[in-house]
Length: 498
Image (cartoon, rainbow, N blue to C red; front, side, top):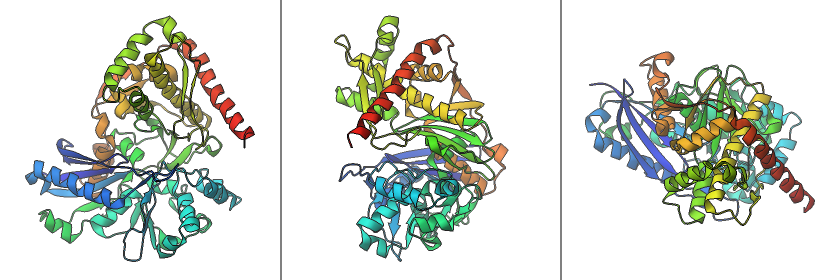
């Protein structure tokens, strides 16, 4: 019987489990939804126990769908939402809900952290953003001192699941950079950054490469799941974006992906550390040795259209709404006179690092209806990616090819719009929806040493390619200029009103 490999993706909205065989053929998959708690303005939390129970449910579904294949499980790879903070006591018990990547409560702590070391940005290779892990820890120390006093370990989301699977405290390089405790150039914890964050090395997990063995599945779970063919290896794994890159074969310098999920990510692989912290570019290690990556991150991407569809009562008919937008955009005059939308519904990261930024509709006229506004939403998301492309170029990053992945990638209309706005070709791979979980499973294969990187991390077939229309550049440029000016004006007004 062929060995099988399990990829677990600890997402924000769901847990995904993907079982593949040695030829990377899909054997079984499952997805279990998650809930988010927002008990205060700017807060975003989840219960780590809900992650764990959802993992058990997803794994059980996969096991029930393919019992014989599951019994041949050889390795597990982990992917997960980045930057979250899970606080554990001396016995490994969770002390409070996990604070998530899109939580915005700790602006004060982020400012103080960056000011605490003269060379903070140079050491961390990033500015101290509220979404990163270290400011969350400082917030807990200030506002929940009893919790902080009991804290003995602080784990990232997927690393908490690793702990539950194995009992081991281990992290890996691609996720570690988002803590602001990591020396990204040298791929190790930085004691000065840890001290600035109010902790030391005893609070953090051991570091491994994403493609290395990090731990082994516990005997109790092996017995529970009927696994008798030897120890199951757990790979270091990756943050969700690095895992998605591995899943579509973006593993060498110049290769990248554009992810149209809840948030938007432009991810590019580099062969050395490149940074542009002044423009909120994220720079981190890749999940594979001796490689790094840069990311431009937009906090609202496909979720902006979902939000608007809910507002107008079409939340369950987003596909129909896109079809209506496409028909609207086929009339040049209508498209040219459409409103402008800035989709900063939960603040924005790249290029502004502004958690207080707002969504804006501008240029509304009496003739505009909800379809014109929906067009503006889709175009505004594309303009966010134009900013990301601009920042990547400013950092000296070379991007030679780019896959389009995520839920928003299902729309051919949106895919072509993105290519036209960016004036860059975008390739749609087969299996775009399973990127992170597949990348995790691939890292499991590498950790189990069943093949080399070239054999395992191949690129998928290209389902379709969106090639930019040069004539569209003259249409989008003035609208992109207005988009950028709107944020600048709104930001100026906010600063004056303080």
